[in-house]
Length: 263
Image (cartoon, rainbow, N blue to C red; front, side, top):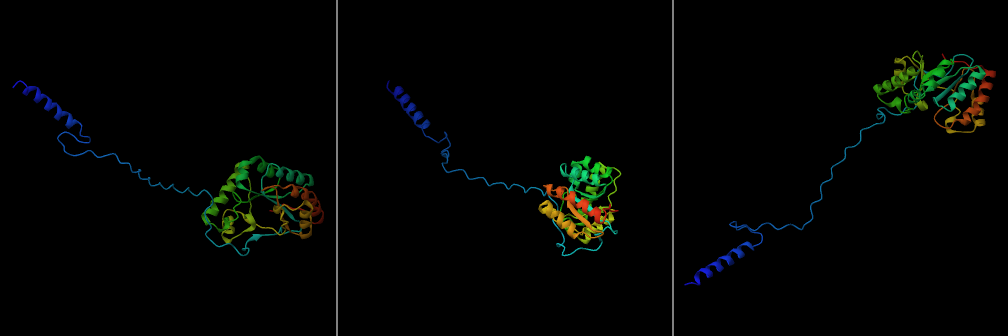
């Protein structure tokens, strides 16, 4: 019949449209495509940040000392007294001390910090040029240095002496002073190994605590005896009171005992 051909064409078109409209299927596969998930994505596991490497001094390896070890020098060995200045050089106060000592025509010992010697080599050179004594006072005022390993102590003292000699190539450094006076037998032994005697003190006016100038003067002049080693500071903070006290201390000690250079 004439209608069979158009009818067959219509049926074929209907089958084609129905097959293309099946969402999520592929022709001939019979398997539906997976639907998009609406569940939240899993939170990524945080990656641990590595701890920063230690940059400070190594930890102590021995107990805090309860007393002073043998081998410390505490007196001049003569009638005259010695003035010692710690924690410099300082660009403000060290020149003031040097000016006062030069005016009084006396010598002192400067216990210098290695990092500050590296920063202010001209002041270290002036100390030596004007005839004063140099003393190693550790690289960065580590009061626990004596409790660290022998290797750490040796490295610190050698580094400090090297900084001093960078400023004064032929410098003699006959003394070492432990920051805070926290001596151990080990730090005394290492200092000796490196050619330095361990220098303590007999008079401490505690000027590091910033008392007034008159208080510092009274403490020094009252406690001083023949052969005393006096501890003062030209660095480590505001030393205006110490500078004021020095004018009176130098005059008094020179008159009563004389002021000598440690040797």
